[in-house]
Image 1 (spheres, rainbow, N blue to C red):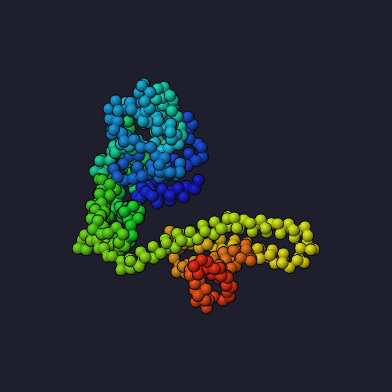
Image 2: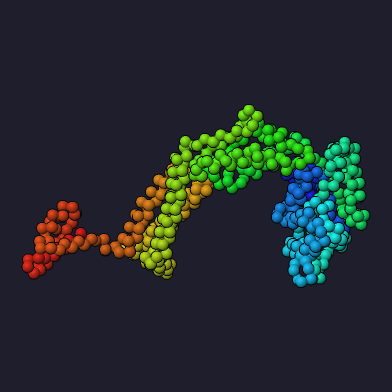
Length: 480
């Protein structure tokens, strides 16, 4: 494990907590080298510090780093377990009902187990926690043993945060950082029972966010905002100018409430006004949204794209041609798997066997050799046409998805392919019935020959046959 890469990975996702991340990286180093104790959870960590500074975010990043997904974090808000009866829900009752904690770990043993605001839990919970941290296992209400040795236990707490903010202690470099760690260590020792505190592998203090850090958090929150469904799936471009980001960072900075106050500021100053503006526009309208800072406040300006109709028509054209390309592909595949082409394939195989068996005499028969060559050419042309339409359909589908630009030449390619496809089908019919290239036109009536002579100039070669009928009527057959 590259320690510098780990530090970079965590610092790029959690801002302003370099010291806490450095302590966490040391813990991960011990885990990686398999020097940690066995028979207990992989690690037990206590995160202490003010609210909204990234303690929960670090737990999510750790879950993704260790187990491959942020969803591998199982969180329990300990304010919901502030009485003894609620604590019993964690392990279940004797009636056989599964416990919330034991069933979660049984389903997902490889996880980050987060106990948020642990100081709000009932004292009975700490008895359960002693078993988890000490032996790596816990029995549920039915007596079944659940193993916690594949989990990382993280506890968060705000104890000591108020005194931390009021005093001169700040989590910085050098001696002051050591003083801050000593401060939180002392508060945690006073709050938690000694037998519990001694089972915690590492206490990691988090510092309040400064204004510069909040500025980086603003950029991350805006990036997440642009990924929301209401923006990502709407035909719009959203541009937020730098002064607006500076304004949000300045207005959203609060040492006591951390990033949660910033999220409230972004919601009130940007998200809600943007939602009100967008609700006044047609969903299918293509919009250009610009957020500027005017007279000390964000102002949202929305402009309809003048080329929106043209772009919409182009999108429809792409989709229609992609669907049409699929229908053409199915048509040629239907012919290639049909009776006529199958009979040609069977004839080709027969001629191939004859050519191999009668190698000297086969090619001395011109009509047979010409037939064989013509069928081979038809088969090759069919395969070429099939590959061409598949390529055209793929290019159109990629253009519809927006991966590659749409080229108007694709439309010309489809038209050319249709002409080539018609010629190939005509050649197939002619090859299947060489003597049947004739059209019969039957004229019925009292004087059919006069009608036949009237249309004769439109035809090249005619053969007239007449049949007399009763009352002077007859039938004329024109064979071309």
